[in-house]
Picture 1 (cartoon, rainbow, N blue to C red):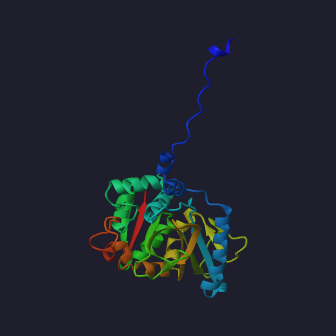
Picture 2: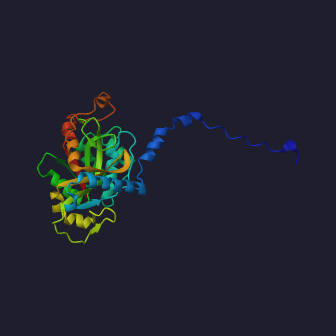
Picture 3: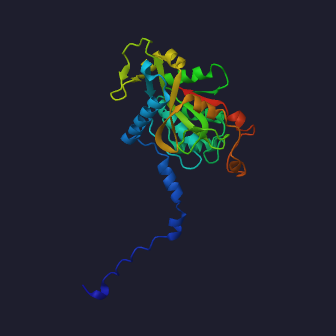
Length: 298
Protein backbone atom coordinates (compact mmCIF):
# COMPACT_ATOMS: atom_id res chain seq x y z
CA UNK A 1 0.00 0.00 0.00
CA UNK A 2 1.31 3.44 -0.85
CA UNK A 3 2.25 5.68 2.00
CA UNK A 4 0.57 8.58 0.27
CA UNK A 5 -2.80 6.80 0.49
CA UNK A 6 -2.57 5.74 4.15
CA UNK A 7 -5.14 7.09 6.61
CA UNK A 8 -3.95 9.86 8.93
CA UNK A 9 -2.99 8.77 12.43
CA UNK A 10 -5.78 9.32 14.98
CA UNK A 11 -5.54 12.50 16.98
CA UNK A 12 -4.48 12.24 20.61
CA UNK A 13 -7.33 12.71 23.09
CA UNK A 14 -7.68 16.29 24.35
CA UNK A 15 -6.28 17.10 27.78
CA UNK A 16 -8.72 17.12 30.71
CA UNK A 17 -10.92 20.18 30.92
CA UNK A 18 -9.54 21.86 34.03
CA UNK A 19 -12.59 24.10 34.32
CA UNK A 20 -14.78 20.99 34.63
CA UNK A 21 -12.43 19.43 37.18
CA UNK A 22 -12.43 22.56 39.29
CA UNK A 23 -16.22 22.63 39.30
CA UNK A 24 -16.31 19.30 41.19
CA UNK A 25 -16.39 20.09 44.90
CA UNK A 26 -14.02 17.93 46.94
CA UNK A 27 -16.13 18.81 49.98
CA UNK A 28 -19.20 17.29 48.31
CA UNK A 29 -17.30 14.11 47.43
CA UNK A 30 -16.00 13.76 50.99
CA UNK A 31 -19.40 14.65 52.42
CA UNK A 32 -21.16 11.98 50.38
CA UNK A 33 -18.64 9.41 51.64
CA UNK A 34 -19.00 10.52 55.24
CA UNK A 35 -22.78 10.28 55.32
CA UNK A 36 -22.85 6.56 54.43
CA UNK A 37 -23.49 4.03 57.20
CA UNK A 38 -20.38 2.03 58.14
CA UNK A 39 -20.34 -1.35 59.85
CA UNK A 40 -19.14 -0.95 63.45
CA UNK A 41 -15.66 -2.49 63.51
CA UNK A 42 -13.91 -4.38 66.26
CA UNK A 43 -12.13 -1.19 67.37
CA UNK A 44 -15.49 0.45 68.15
CA UNK A 45 -16.60 -2.48 70.29
CA UNK A 46 -13.21 -2.64 72.01
CA UNK A 47 -13.41 1.07 72.77
CA UNK A 48 -16.84 0.54 74.31
CA UNK A 49 -15.57 -2.30 76.51
CA UNK A 50 -12.82 -0.06 77.87
CA UNK A 51 -15.38 2.64 78.56
CA UNK A 52 -17.64 0.12 80.30
CA UNK A 53 -14.79 -1.02 82.53
CA UNK A 54 -13.93 2.55 83.55
CA UNK A 55 -17.57 3.45 84.20
CA UNK A 56 -18.24 0.33 86.26
CA UNK A 57 -15.17 0.82 88.43
CA UNK A 58 -15.40 4.59 88.80
CA UNK A 59 -19.05 5.62 88.69
CA UNK A 60 -21.08 2.85 90.32
CA UNK A 61 -20.97 2.91 94.12
CA UNK A 62 -21.18 -0.23 96.28
CA UNK A 63 -20.41 -2.39 93.28
CA UNK A 64 -20.09 -5.71 95.23
CA UNK A 65 -23.76 -5.47 96.18
CA UNK A 66 -24.94 -4.73 92.62
CA UNK A 67 -25.84 -6.57 89.45
CA UNK A 68 -25.29 -4.57 86.25
CA UNK A 69 -27.76 -5.03 83.42
CA UNK A 70 -26.92 -3.86 79.91
CA UNK A 71 -28.81 -3.74 76.64
CA UNK A 72 -27.56 -2.03 73.49
CA UNK A 73 -28.51 -2.01 69.82
CA UNK A 74 -25.37 -1.63 67.70
CA UNK A 75 -26.14 0.73 64.81
CA UNK A 76 -23.86 1.33 61.85
CA UNK A 77 -22.27 4.74 62.57
CA UNK A 78 -22.70 7.63 60.14
CA UNK A 79 -20.35 10.62 60.18
CA UNK A 80 -21.89 14.01 59.54
CA UNK A 81 -20.73 16.54 56.96
CA UNK A 82 -21.53 20.06 58.10
CA UNK A 83 -24.34 20.90 60.55
CA UNK A 84 -26.19 17.62 59.92
CA UNK A 85 -26.10 16.00 63.37
CA UNK A 86 -29.88 15.67 63.49
CA UNK A 87 -30.01 14.26 59.97
CA UNK A 88 -27.47 11.50 60.66
CA UNK A 89 -29.01 10.79 64.09
CA UNK A 90 -32.36 10.16 62.41
CA UNK A 91 -30.76 8.02 59.70
CA UNK A 92 -29.09 5.90 62.40
CA UNK A 93 -32.35 5.73 64.35
CA UNK A 94 -34.05 4.20 61.31
CA UNK A 95 -31.83 1.12 61.73
CA UNK A 96 -33.62 0.39 65.01
CA UNK A 97 -37.07 0.30 63.41
CA UNK A 98 -38.45 -2.59 61.38
CA UNK A 99 -37.70 -2.39 57.64
CA UNK A 100 -37.38 1.40 57.67
CA UNK A 101 -33.69 2.10 57.19
CA UNK A 102 -32.99 5.29 55.22
CA UNK A 103 -29.83 7.11 54.16
CA UNK A 104 -28.59 10.41 55.57
CA UNK A 105 -28.50 12.16 52.15
CA UNK A 106 -32.17 11.18 51.69
CA UNK A 107 -33.06 12.63 55.11
CA UNK A 108 -31.14 15.81 54.31
CA UNK A 109 -32.95 16.28 51.01
CA UNK A 110 -36.34 15.70 52.63
CA UNK A 111 -35.61 18.12 55.49
CA UNK A 112 -34.86 20.79 52.90
CA UNK A 113 -37.89 19.95 50.76
CA UNK A 114 -40.15 20.23 53.82
CA UNK A 115 -38.68 23.61 54.73
CA UNK A 116 -37.36 22.32 58.07
CA UNK A 117 -33.68 22.85 57.33
CA UNK A 118 -31.26 24.62 54.98
CA UNK A 119 -27.99 22.79 55.64
CA UNK A 120 -29.21 19.87 57.70
CA UNK A 121 -29.60 21.78 60.96
CA UNK A 122 -32.60 20.90 63.15
CA UNK A 123 -33.10 23.36 65.98
CA UNK A 124 -36.54 22.04 66.94
CA UNK A 125 -37.54 18.73 68.53
CA UNK A 126 -40.96 19.15 66.94
CA UNK A 127 -39.38 19.45 63.49
CA UNK A 128 -37.34 16.32 64.23
CA UNK A 129 -40.54 14.43 65.16
CA UNK A 130 -42.30 15.68 62.03
CA UNK A 131 -39.38 14.69 59.81
CA UNK A 132 -39.22 11.21 61.40
CA UNK A 133 -42.90 10.56 60.74
CA UNK A 134 -42.60 11.85 57.18
CA UNK A 135 -39.49 9.79 56.38
CA UNK A 136 -40.18 6.59 58.33
CA UNK A 137 -43.93 6.34 58.56
CA UNK A 138 -43.42 5.78 62.27
CA UNK A 139 -45.08 7.20 65.37
CA UNK A 140 -43.21 9.92 67.23
CA UNK A 141 -43.69 11.87 70.42
CA UNK A 142 -41.89 14.82 72.00
CA UNK A 143 -41.37 14.31 75.73
CA UNK A 144 -41.17 17.32 78.02
CA UNK A 145 -38.56 16.12 80.49
CA UNK A 146 -39.97 18.42 83.19
CA UNK A 147 -43.02 16.15 83.43
CA UNK A 148 -42.85 13.78 86.37
CA UNK A 149 -43.30 10.59 84.33
CA UNK A 150 -41.10 11.53 81.35
CA UNK A 151 -37.96 9.75 82.60
CA UNK A 152 -39.94 6.54 83.15
CA UNK A 153 -41.33 6.79 79.61
CA UNK A 154 -37.83 7.31 78.20
CA UNK A 155 -36.42 4.27 80.03
CA UNK A 156 -39.41 2.11 79.10
CA UNK A 157 -38.83 3.11 75.48
CA UNK A 158 -35.16 2.11 75.66
CA UNK A 159 -36.09 -1.14 77.39
CA UNK A 160 -38.27 -1.87 74.36
CA UNK A 161 -35.27 -1.32 72.06
CA UNK A 162 -36.77 1.72 70.38
CA UNK A 163 -34.78 4.84 69.42
CA UNK A 164 -34.60 7.98 71.53
CA UNK A 165 -33.27 11.24 70.03
CA UNK A 166 -31.84 13.77 72.49
CA UNK A 167 -30.54 17.29 71.83
CA UNK A 168 -27.77 18.29 74.24
CA UNK A 169 -24.59 20.37 74.50
CA UNK A 170 -21.70 18.28 73.18
CA UNK A 171 -18.24 18.79 74.69
CA UNK A 172 -14.95 18.32 72.80
CA UNK A 173 -15.15 14.55 73.47
CA UNK A 174 -18.89 14.59 72.59
CA UNK A 175 -19.97 13.90 76.18
CA UNK A 176 -22.72 16.07 77.68
CA UNK A 177 -21.70 19.50 78.96
CA UNK A 178 -23.34 22.77 79.99
CA UNK A 179 -22.73 25.49 77.38
CA UNK A 180 -26.15 27.17 77.48
CA UNK A 181 -27.04 25.66 74.11
CA UNK A 182 -24.03 27.04 72.23
CA UNK A 183 -22.85 23.49 71.43
CA UNK A 184 -26.30 22.06 70.72
CA UNK A 185 -26.01 18.64 69.12
CA UNK A 186 -28.25 15.60 68.47
CA UNK A 187 -27.52 12.12 69.81
CA UNK A 188 -29.31 8.83 69.31
CA UNK A 189 -29.71 6.67 72.42
CA UNK A 190 -29.41 2.98 71.60
CA UNK A 191 -29.51 1.30 75.01
CA UNK A 192 -28.82 1.47 78.73
CA UNK A 193 -26.65 0.22 81.58
CA UNK A 194 -28.27 0.06 85.03
CA UNK A 195 -27.41 -1.37 88.42
CA UNK A 196 -29.86 -3.27 90.61
CA UNK A 197 -29.39 -4.81 94.02
CA UNK A 198 -28.30 -8.43 94.14
CA UNK A 199 -31.22 -9.09 96.44
CA UNK A 200 -33.53 -8.81 93.41
CA UNK A 201 -34.20 -12.30 92.12
CA UNK A 202 -33.56 -12.70 88.40
CA UNK A 203 -33.88 -15.91 86.42
CA UNK A 204 -31.12 -16.59 83.92
CA UNK A 205 -33.27 -16.88 80.83
CA UNK A 206 -32.39 -14.02 78.46
CA UNK A 207 -29.41 -12.92 80.60
CA UNK A 208 -25.81 -13.65 79.64
CA UNK A 209 -22.96 -12.98 82.06
CA UNK A 210 -20.04 -11.04 80.62
CA UNK A 211 -16.88 -13.14 80.25
CA UNK A 212 -14.53 -10.37 81.46
CA UNK A 213 -16.57 -7.89 83.51
CA UNK A 214 -18.03 -10.28 86.04
CA UNK A 215 -20.64 -7.94 87.52
CA UNK A 216 -22.04 -7.20 84.05
CA UNK A 217 -24.94 -9.09 82.46
CA UNK A 218 -26.26 -8.61 78.93
CA UNK A 219 -30.00 -8.71 78.25
CA UNK A 220 -31.82 -9.96 75.18
CA UNK A 221 -34.47 -7.56 73.84
CA UNK A 222 -37.24 -9.77 75.27
CA UNK A 223 -35.60 -9.83 78.70
CA UNK A 224 -35.05 -6.08 78.57
CA UNK A 225 -38.77 -5.53 78.07
CA UNK A 226 -39.60 -8.02 80.83
CA UNK A 227 -37.38 -6.17 83.34
CA UNK A 228 -38.84 -2.78 82.50
CA UNK A 229 -39.92 -2.08 86.11
CA UNK A 230 -36.50 -2.91 87.56
CA UNK A 231 -34.78 -0.77 84.92
CA UNK A 232 -36.99 2.25 85.63
CA UNK A 233 -36.38 1.88 89.38
CA UNK A 234 -32.57 1.60 89.08
CA UNK A 235 -30.49 4.13 91.02
CA UNK A 236 -27.52 4.16 88.63
CA UNK A 237 -28.60 4.73 85.04
CA UNK A 238 -26.31 5.18 82.04
CA UNK A 239 -27.22 5.37 78.39
CA UNK A 240 -25.40 4.36 75.22
CA UNK A 241 -25.34 7.16 72.67
CA UNK A 242 -24.11 7.67 69.11
CA UNK A 243 -23.81 10.91 67.19
CA UNK A 244 -22.33 12.22 63.97
CA UNK A 245 -18.93 13.48 65.11
CA UNK A 246 -17.39 10.16 66.13
CA UNK A 247 -17.79 6.49 65.27
CA UNK A 248 -17.28 5.60 68.93
CA UNK A 249 -20.19 4.84 71.23
CA UNK A 250 -20.76 7.16 74.18
CA UNK A 251 -21.68 5.92 77.64
CA UNK A 252 -23.13 8.77 79.69
CA UNK A 253 -25.01 9.05 82.93
CA UNK A 254 -28.64 9.78 82.10
CA UNK A 255 -28.64 12.47 84.78
CA UNK A 256 -25.80 14.40 83.11
CA UNK A 257 -27.38 14.04 79.67
CA UNK A 258 -30.73 15.37 80.86
CA UNK A 259 -29.01 18.25 82.69
CA UNK A 260 -27.34 19.16 79.40
CA UNK A 261 -30.66 18.85 77.58
CA UNK A 262 -32.21 21.20 80.15
CA UNK A 263 -29.60 23.92 79.60
CA UNK A 264 -30.34 24.56 75.91
CA UNK A 265 -31.31 28.19 76.41
CA UNK A 266 -30.01 29.95 73.29
CA UNK A 267 -28.38 29.42 69.91
CA UNK A 268 -24.69 30.24 69.74
CA UNK A 269 -24.60 33.98 68.85
CA UNK A 270 -22.21 33.15 66.02
CA UNK A 271 -24.96 31.05 64.48
CA UNK A 272 -27.63 33.69 64.95
CA UNK A 273 -25.69 36.31 62.97
CA UNK A 274 -25.38 33.92 60.01
CA UNK A 275 -28.72 35.16 58.71
CA UNK A 276 -30.28 33.03 56.02
CA UNK A 277 -27.97 30.04 56.54
CA UNK A 278 -30.00 28.26 59.21
CA UNK A 279 -33.66 27.82 60.10
CA UNK A 280 -34.06 28.78 63.76
CA UNK A 281 -37.56 28.50 65.27
CA UNK A 282 -39.20 31.83 65.99
CA UNK A 283 -40.02 30.74 69.53
CA UNK A 284 -36.33 30.06 70.17
CA UNK A 285 -34.63 26.83 71.17
CA UNK A 286 -35.66 27.32 74.80
CA UNK A 287 -39.14 26.21 73.73
CA UNK A 288 -38.18 24.02 70.79
CA UNK A 289 -35.19 22.04 72.15
CA UNK A 290 -34.71 22.69 75.86
CA UNK A 291 -36.09 19.83 78.01
CA UNK A 292 -37.35 18.08 74.86
CA UNK A 293 -36.61 14.48 73.86
CA UNK A 294 -38.02 12.68 70.78
CA UNK A 295 -39.07 9.01 70.96
CA UNK A 296 -39.90 6.86 67.92
CA UNK A 297 -41.59 3.51 67.48
CA UNK A 298 -43.12 1.45 64.67
